[in-house]
Length: 277
Image (cartoon, rainbow, N blue to C red; front, side, top):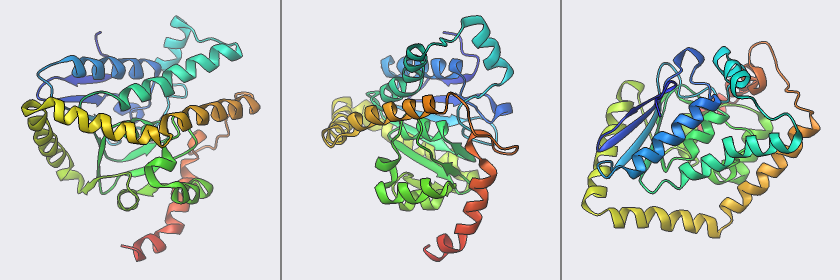
């Protein structure tokens, strides 16, 4: 596959770079297909020991593509099913099934997050094993198709943030277990790649050990109900979208993500956040 919306760089540490900076790396169908292909390619390459996912430009990802010109052209050329079951299968395949595949890529995966990480951006990051973030990263969760948030930050914290609808700062995300490490933006890439290099070295020395660690931890989560709960949450998500009859609440500044409201609520919460650090 020739990539148009991502950059793939093979090597001991393979790089998958979301490459739609003009749209803050909004996730089109084509981007997701290319990312799926690149992760599979890295998994099959014996010279790859770890995979780093990042975004070009100012932001990691602004979430799902809701109608850029490229996405609309793709929909016209390849078509989208319009019947209810067709929509159900399409959305499931594009946002749940592939995300679960990425979560279970046999090699270690690391998300390198800076700037906005909104809705679908959270999905991309959460499907990776490790998340490193810049200090200016902002995470906006929602009940999206791959609803991992209660597992990522805990059920009570998930309720708090989702009820309020606000961004989480990188340090808050770190305190609640979504993010592994936080760095100044100018050091993020250097530190992430250095960590990935050490992980890749371990893979090259003993791939069975590293792969077994990942399998065992993912299996532990599945024994606790992770995949089953995500399956159930997708059913709920789809029912909710059907009840809305496909209409999305928008505002002039934030679209479906209501970014202006999420930023406003973050500002109102900052005094408390700063008092806890």
